[in-house]
Image (tube, rainbow, N blue to C red; front, side, top):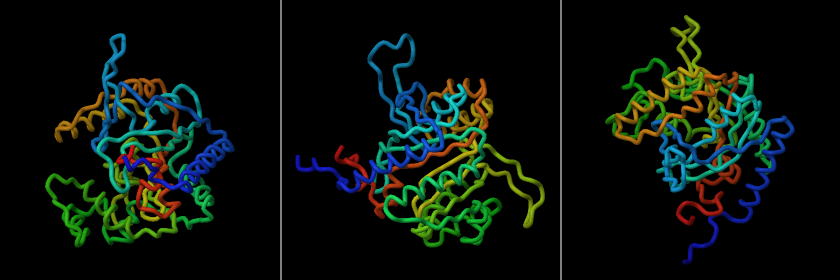
Length: 331
């Protein structure tokens, strides 16, 4: 075969190695423990927008399920470690997502995820920015930093309130972007505005952090109740969540973490309901995570950062293949 050569050049491979060393030094200086957790689990990710790989184990299982799921992030086992008292920790490792392959996506990629006990999402924003700036220094760059709320971003750049505008207003705000509206929800329109109208306009040399998302997009974040009347109307409930962008690339997604086990189960079950409606596979719920949360997950904030996305931003490329030794097509 003629396609045996790497898809990344040697400079990109060396930069990845330097980035890993920088990350480990960054957390060692802050006394954050590096850990490793399982890649295979009896539970899968229930998120309706993420598809997991599964496989069948052929050995003895002592009655346990033979079907195992490749992790889409190390989040659940890391939270089990937090509940066991491990304290501040991080993992740098491979994760897997089915159906995601293309110019900016690869079905296996590297994720950095870390947790800070006793922190909220806004305090974690500062540390995430510091890490990204340390990475930029590897290529002789720095970036201005801007921090805004989800609501203010949409108001300032699109002239709409994402919490109160109706679906027709959101759809109209897409302008000449044509999308089949069949089956799309309000959250889908908000996401499309972010990916098609907002992200392409982000300054390539700037870090932008967007926090306090709509409560309907809480994922595994805490929800903060609105504080009554505010200028322009009633203050809405928000998810204590942030996303960090370097130029148009989303690099990191962080939460002031949900710690309520009953609410966690309810969110898993809502995910299953959406999956059932779409005719999707229903991965088993992570009962061990729920048990750990019932035992006592400490108040904490956590964030996941995509290493390939960061490397793409450092190298100024839109092709994920250029930061992977071998991409999916040549694996």
